[in-house]
Every structure is written in structure tokens, then in C-alpha cells.
Amino acid sequence: MPSAELVVASTLGVKSLEECLRTRRSCHDFGWDPLTEQELLGLCWAGQGITGPGGQRTAPSAGAVHPLELYVVAGTGIFHYEPEANRLEQVARGDRRPALCAAAQSQDVIGLAPATLVIVAVEGRMDPRYGARSRHYELVETGHVAQNVLLAATAMGICATPVGALDDSAVRDVLDLPPNHTPLYLVAVGHGADRASIGASR
Ligand SMILES: Cc1cc2nc3c(=O)[nH]c(=O)nc-3n(C[C@H](O)[C@H](O)[C@H](O)COP(=O)(O)O)c2cc1C
Image (cartoon, rainbow, N blue to C red; front, side):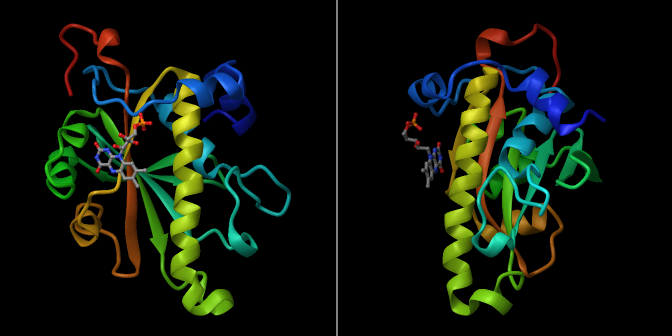
């Protein structure tokens, strides 16, 4: 598995931040070819990668508590991003993308995306420190993570769209998560349709 530095150097591209900010667009026009593991890892690293000696990450977190987890739902199964190892751990086999699509109001953007990142809040992690304010911080931090992913996708030439219209508990069921894990936001990702390779299966 490549180190975080290698992922940054080889995957995230060389576009300037200004260019990424200028050109980021939600995109619904996905090709059929799947993203590579390294591309998915690069996106996850952008969202939650560890970058500091105290476990600080690419996205800020109130009190550095880090209440969020990242999952990838792809054709081959479901993967959990492990920031410490910078790797994707397979947690389920089989194609759960149709079920995820159904849990997101059957939107084509999820149905057609080769993969979708799921940002999940682990309720209880922040509560000892922030009490009732925790839910607010979880939502704010979800935005930080999603924007990192979207800008990284832009840098990598990957098509990406944030999706907030989802049934939290239905997505929780798709991912087989415990009750205190709340899916908050999805980011559908894939290559643009112009890159579709003939005969590639989903
Ligand atoms: C909080 C939030 C929720 C969104 N939910 C959806 C969604 O459920 N489905 C969808 O296709 N796009 C969704 N989008 C994407 C917006 O439609 C998109 O950002 C908007 O049209 C502006 O286009 P742009 O992202 O290209 O600037 C969402 C965006 C945000 C910020």
C-alpha cells in the first residue's frame, strides 16, 4: 500500500489550488470504468488523511476529536478508510450500489457512479467534550471533509458530486453500521463519460 506521501505525489496531480477552486463542478456524467484503488485512496486521504504528529488530518476537527469515518461503496464491496494506515479495508463484499442508490432517493447520480464515498458521524465521540454542540460540529466537519474530497477530485480529473438527499438509517443499513453511526453526506465519484472504456463492467 502506498504511503500518504506517495499518494499525494502520484495521484493528486499538479493543478494549482486556484485552478481547482475555479473548475470544481458537480458532475453527473459518469463513465463505466471503475476508479482505481489508488484513486479512491487519494480521495479518502484528501478527506481524512493524517498529516500531523498529533494525528491531525487534512480536514480540521474541533478539539482534534475527529468524529467522522469514511466509507467507499464500490462495485466490489464496501471499504472503510483507515487513516492511521492510509489504506482501504474491505468490510463487505458484493455490489451494494443499487441499495445505496435506493437509500438516496434513487438518484441517478448515485445509481450511475462507479463509487460513492460515505461520510459517517460516530455519535458519542464528541459528546464528552462538546455535549449538545457535538451534532453541530459533526455537520460542519462533514462539509470540510467533503470539500477536500471535491477539490482533490478536481485536481485528479475525477468527476464528483456531493449528495445530501439520503435516508440516514437506510444508508446505515446498507453499510451494516451500528445505531450510533450516522451517515451524513455522500460524494459520488467516477471518471467522466468521455473516459468510458468500451466493455468495462460495473
Ligand atoms: C448540501 C448539499 C446537498 C446536495 N445534494 C445533492 C443531491 O442530493 N443530489 C444531487 O444531484 N446534487 C446534490 N448537491 C449538488 C448541488 O446540486 C450542486 O452543488 C449545485 O447544483 C451547484 O453546482 P456545482 O456543485 O457544480 O457548483 C448537493 C449540494 C450540497 C452542497
